[in-house]
Length: 108
Image 1 (cartoon, one colour):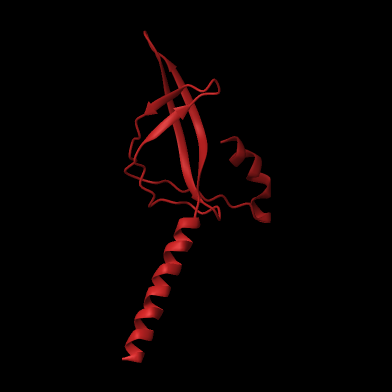
Image 2: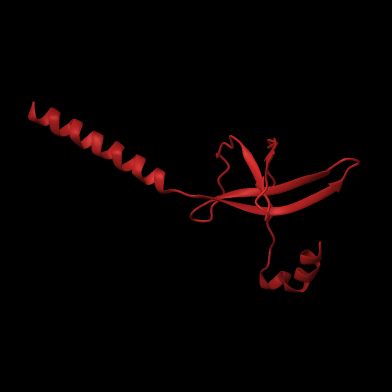
């Protein structure tokens, strides 16, 4: 009986610790690009961003429930969040053998 009690207590402590750790994680929003389109009656704002965890790693599993755009004057507007069906990753070789081509890669 004592072993069962200790096992249950140990299991609960493991679960409790895990929930505390996940509660401390932060998600940072990194704005990549903003495109403004002048329409006939309003401006359209397309904002491209990525999500990072507190360690700077991508957070692709984050579920965005809602979003708002907050302007410097304090005005807040609801935003539609498009779900991208794909992800693109680019890798650039900046080793010594590619040093001469690095400016061309940066320009592109």
